[in-house]
Length: 283
Image (cartoon, one colour):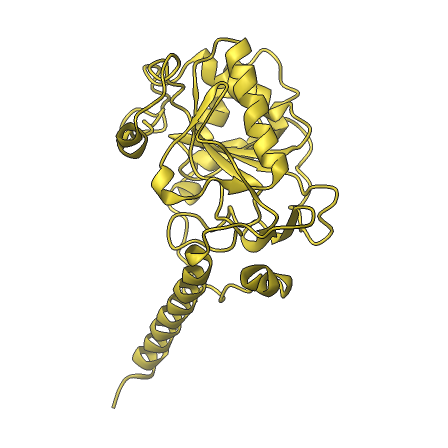
């Protein structure tokens, strides 16, 4: 007879595999859609990790101060507020001579879960921006193969939590500050070492509250916008803690507990999208 513990953990494993299969099947439905919905005002629905968007718009491959990367992924869609944010940040990069912003993933044409990579980016309000502010791209349009093959270098020295000053520059700080000061921005995720660097070197601190430490994010920063005013079914995150975040809460990210987080024994719950997303998918 099988040991009861073996049966228990086998059940957990099978349950986890089933959840993964269901999640993959759900993601395939959204990945197959190649056009946004048409008509009506744009609506972000649900939350950043379980939601969708109607009336999304596509960000142009090239604009003032920015260029889109990884075009084959077809994740250049988002809420009009997100498009406007990218365009404004690109214009800031031009005015301040910061180089060209290289823009990574936004979301799919109707949002929803993706087949790989991101759990968030589902409501058209998230965008990844590489820390590589390309001087090479500033005076020319990148070739298609460059956009597909260039990698975003880490700003950390290899296998450490120390900033690599060959990759980090004041331009990175200025772009982060410009983004954080935009009122539509809810928060910006960066590697804890980047947050620490900003806490140490920034002369002004009022914008640092929006800069939030998170695992990885050492080769890009992740901007998340607030729910748009006319998106009544959009679910925002909890309010940011008070203060600039340069306190004991930041120190925790360099603890053993943060470096080696415990892996949960139970499988994740199946993704549950808002009912409204069914009509967005089928529209």
